[in-house]
Picture 1: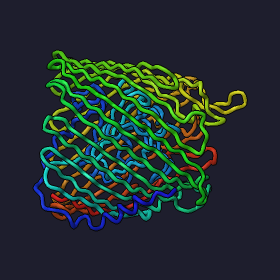
Picture 2: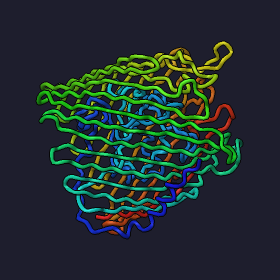
Picture 3: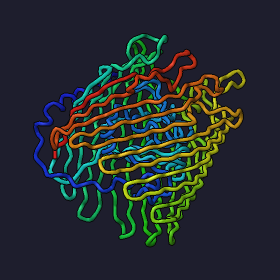
Length: 610
């Protein structure tokens, strides 16, 4: 089934949209850039949290000018991005050396990912529809349930605003036959805010693998719709809803050679002030991760996941510095596929609580969660954390937490391959950190150790290749992140040192570089802004036996922007300035590298009504 109806409607709608733009006063300056909610499900400043947190706001996203969402994540503290080629190809985002499916992706609080493969479709997230990204490193299973062994990344879609409607639009293109365009409108009243935006990205791409499959370029297109609305009633109850919908196609070498995808989340709910110190939120959401595969234009297979999720959260202030967050979340995964799974659905119900308290210079936090899973029964996880404001600028923290990852449908039920007796993967993490923040500068340092037991590995058992619980991993790491704004300059840097080993063999875990880093530097010069990003990645191994070595590399990206007037601007980006050849993943079975782009240039014209 080709999904073209939405794409056609959006492209037709983009053309006349600017004609309806109206004059409007300047918007209020945002003051919540340093507030995050992912660590505990309630709002905290970054300086208050007892976790290792990175915030990427809309201003930074626009400054970086990413062509792919993973451009925003690459090289951040604790993160390593591995793609089987650029532009919509299968992508893993390793957090703190754990597996990619140990890294939970949330979109506006809703769990995303495939129930069959277990991983999230990072490659399909449209950067133009994203308001803010919150990265929380370290286990969060005691709050969010399965998958959050390495941590959580939460994506927030574009926000509405108060005031008359304001229109926005962009048009761009560049190397590899890349084309993109979009339009949006945001506005509201004292009680209502809304935003609706649409975007389209397409590229001819590059030939993903040399000497395997065809020699043609492997393209990608993505058409996305994002919407968010909230309305506050006279009695204080707030109604809210949000949508992120993406569809398109991505090509690659092999059989099949094309996937038509649908990646979507829809959520609605209400927030109720029960008492002065007690707020509750109730929400229903559905996420979908669907793919239809084709070989030489002929239908090949379908793997569709639908997840229905119901959440109930309560925020209770017990004292001046004591808060209780408690709730229930339940979800059901359903699989629809041309593959005949032994089971095609399962449910999970989780009950959790977080207690935060402070006395003097000290803060304490504890969380506990019970998950009841239809497949493997009950699982209890917990976490404790301590923090101390050592000086006005220096804050210390330490934490210990347990987590787990439920086996996927493929691992449990895939015909001829699945193992229904698998146990969840389990972990323990100990972390010590410090954050120094003064004026316009900060430095955050964290040292951690994670031990993962019951790791699932594919092995030959009784003449059958199947997943079993055998491996154990020990991961140690050091993360350093810092930033400084001084006059017209804005600098941000991160460094990750990682020792990720298979405890049974002593080998490094595959595709985890021991050293990686990132440095961003931007400067405002009148109506111009100039900037660049340096990405560095050490060598790694493509296989668990450490026989296929992937060389390290360094990349330089440059960018510039010019404000034509208060509403119009033009942006130019040059990626991989020195045209480096580099590889982050290899297809061992076909003995072919997954290619990455050489030097590339992109230009974009942006309009924002003010």
